Length: 315
Length: 251
Image (cartoon, rainbow over all chains, first blue to last red; front, side, top):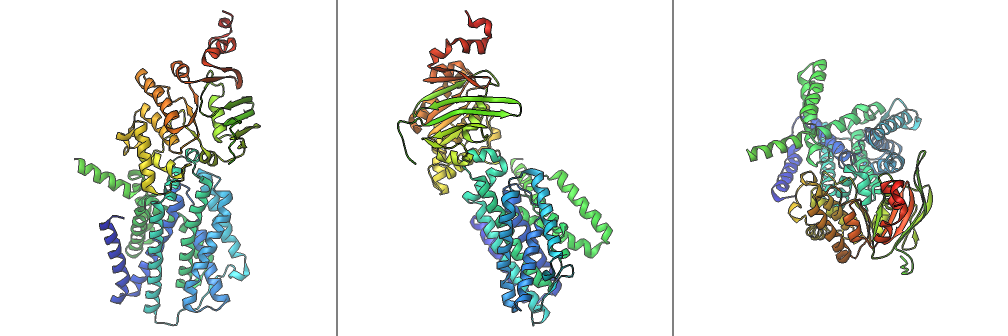
């Protein structure tokens, strides 16, 4: 990263990290927690969906697997709050393992077929979890809360999710600028040509899929603990899968900044609409926003403003 | 890998490729010797590009074996063949449109046979190859900003970036003007000298074939009908009949 953007990134993170010291209302901490979470989800998705061009519409599955794995570990072993937070890491690894197994056959399929298969995968996982008694079945799992005042516990979860976001963004940034990232761009652009350039496309795609599943798995674990009650519908919903894709594409898939911008804008708009507008009107505005962006900025907001800035400079 | 000087660099035996009811290649035997410039000619639809696709691994033959340095590569993935040193260009150019000219080449360097993993070193190597192919000034352009001749050279540059032992050139002369053809012929010889690469080329431009190749294989309807020096091939009755029709063959 060049010096100025790096300083800006560090400053932003520092300000966000110090924010809870101002003792803000719990509402703001919760809102930012959700925002960070969506940045994690859409930025991770970007590794397979944006860089490699394989549009996964089942990423909620990895989020949900992480959530249930953490919830199960916490209840089964009666973990302390600290250990519960840490157990989201093995939960993320489990999500990554599932991605490895599922990715092997699925990533042989290209284009819309891959998207359809990932949707089916998410449905299958959802149904499986609902039918496993040990995972609470259709009733879900309850977890014990931190024995702390609400402000403190929310502030802790806020900081942990912020940390996960920073780690995710740093990883995705470095991957994007590595030999691996170059290989993925080649895969996205023309997979057959990539093969003739000695790029092991099958291996790269699986690695990308595994990385893109790991961070959502960890995020799911944190989310489960944050809610303290986890139900399949709350984490496996297709709406989450779709939202992840929309956020990344809205900002600009395949760019580092795109999913961040998309996640921030859409979370803010969503929250604003649900606060200030009736539910029906909110949906209409939300939908209209997508239509406008898709028509006028098909490559996402980032690409649109880059072109605009270049045009300004030339004029 | 075991190097065996007595074996041909690349060898195909009984290569048969079918697309449904159409037999694109039927029992083709060929071999490429180290250091030669071998031409592959034949009328449209005779199976030339199909043979290149089989060699580079984008297509699997139904029958036959392929070997490189005596090692069987019939079932090897395309990227492994590229890594072993089989580079290719595409007849209808396929640059990676999302990357600049220099990035196209540097990416191939990063994954190619030289084992260069560092970006700076890969970029230096890419710039050397771009200057070799006369594309230095276009390094930071997108492929869409290049003319056809330049795009053809980008195909060559990207294949050279792998540091191939053999490079398959699929009609890199087609659509070029006479001046560009002379340049391209010159480039073909320079590739052989500077990179020590063996060249196997499909070509329709007769001036290019006759002027560069030491040996030529002729395909027609998926079958090898002739093989030999340019002079031998040009006077071969079956070749004349394939190109000009049976009526001419007798004269």
